[in-house]
Length: 528
Image (cartoon, rainbow, N blue to C red; front, side):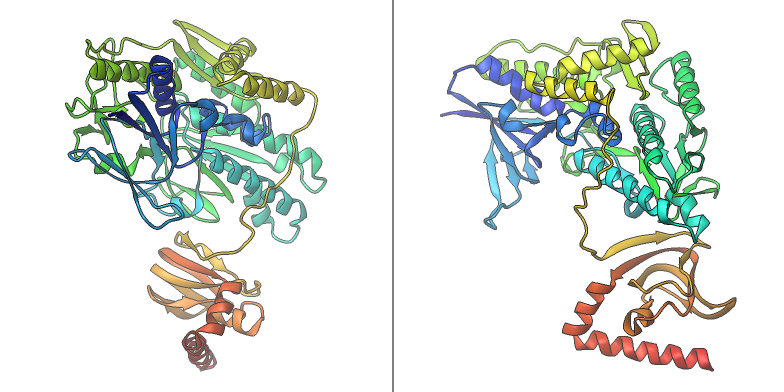
């Protein structure tokens, strides 16, 4: 009977475990390898920020899993649960509404982290996370849309200012690289917009510590800060993001930065499935021994960002690709030792260094104890990551894209993948305007939490609490808004687009009657 190894996660950790197993197993048919991932591709995360600026193409950072893993069974499904006692993994249904149950002999947990905005007001509704390919595509589309709107916005200077202000929260490697590429994109793109003065563009990097890039030495962090500031990036240190709305990024202490684009690279938390597992954790990550066994179980292994992996010197492995790939080799080798009999080996990799791009042919790097910055660090950064890309075909594509980037401007194409309006949740902070008197009526709002006031001119005509809805008059009468609605206490609302409201009113007579009754009552109250 075949023994089965099930790997959960298709990032660096999971994919490299499968690749190592394939090399070690060769043509053996007594062991099968199964990898479960929600997408059918592997993302080369270190190059993902370059998708924003257009330095490389959208698909240049991804490789189909089936091309990488020739003898691994790939299941493109969500994971519903894991039963450690029964040794089963339950996957969400596919086209047929029946869950799939996979039995395993060894389980490898490599689920990485997820963006989690719990406890941070409005971030889940209004901040852009940056973890995967879809995030990069959404962000680039939004930035181009903001530039397009700003170029023709001549009536509202405050709106124009928000559209041309871009805020990135988090000053680690991810945040700095995103801010650098975003800055390169918008400052290079505005030359194509006659209606935008480059001086209007503002890119802000917000970081909660006293220096950016705490992962590297103070000297390299200072170089990075100086380089980014010279390129026009405003860096706000000792400033923590606390909340977000459609109009601003709110910092701890109450300061609000007016913006229509907020990217948050923090915080990251382990996958919810990891939280649900009855295994010992520290800081939300699975505790593993030096052999990468989790919870003291001989059949469960964990690695990558979701695991707390001890490294030589009494420290723990940082969540980087170089550490994940070395951990993958140890896990694969130790699983085969467990299957075939043999002594397991501990992780001995302490790291070769750290690198981060600053855009525009500049980077910082710590390699084997040496501090390198500027063009040389950028050249080393590109060379190393080019050689680490899986497959020569992918390397040639990226090398060609980098070469063309030296000669051609980036493509400012907005790929509209979400043109159909849909109901959405929005967050507002005290004093913010939901809509102004005279605005066009484009949606109905349902107040979930908090309070708002209705103003005609400067006169308050009503106060709204949770459960109320507003904005219905303009939708029913196809007229401009006849009042202003302003947030009193921090509030969350559901925004129902005009088209969806029309469908409900047409097919659910009770909805239409209820709205007409409220309109009548409010009209009487305002005329009194």
